[in-house]
Length: 331
Image (tube, rainbow, N blue to C red):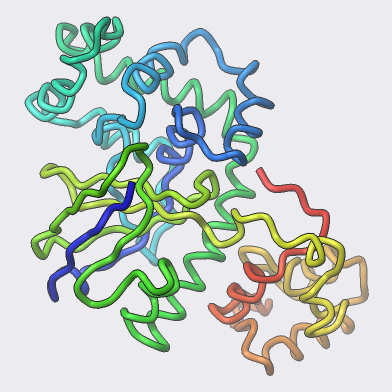
């Protein structure tokens, strides 16, 4: 199904980014999961505890749908760490009862609504219990993989933010949906099966963009009246590289093996000493690699006390996303 999002100038002026562990969790266990998510879920579902049954029952009851209150919109704040699953569940627990009731009405046409729907309607602590169920599923199945996933999401978002800053909103939208986006609309494959297409108008509310490693071609949308619209798109690295690219390290070919290793090793940020330890080289050698990458605009360095801390720039993040090392396992 093709989904078209109609944009107004106010929407373009209010684009923000998000990283959402809750959306990843629900994407991975939903009925229309991507092949990558299917492989991940096949490997971890045996760890799902009995306490996770309510959320799994709710997600499986109506294919292609999950209530928006399960995935609250929380924008990234550069002054703070990215929202955690606990932050998202705190927002979920505070959902207004009228909102919960309105979203659960979608299950009225299900032949046998799941017991959890009845519990949410009748139990004053139903949403809190469902949040506990989601947390149990996250802790048992996704928590170990989440730090690596989050690093990849940040690389993708750094690339998008860099395109936005350097070339404008039109170029950033085109990077998400080549040839299908302009300043008035964004048309992409939706997460539901069906013929034809649907349209949404954001009415100047703007939207959150969230990279998702568990999506392939399809996008996910949360465009209800209760929160800022949320658009989850396939992260760049989620697609399998061509066979030839899997057999060679294209980043090493481009900038050299040592500097490629250094750029990858910096991760979310590190000091020169930490970089040397990660590469198993001397501190002077690590410093030479960092200087070369900084001169190329691939990393930035800042002094913090007696240490120099290196971080990957938007340009460096774009190179990392587009040139993954061969043979690396994806979540």
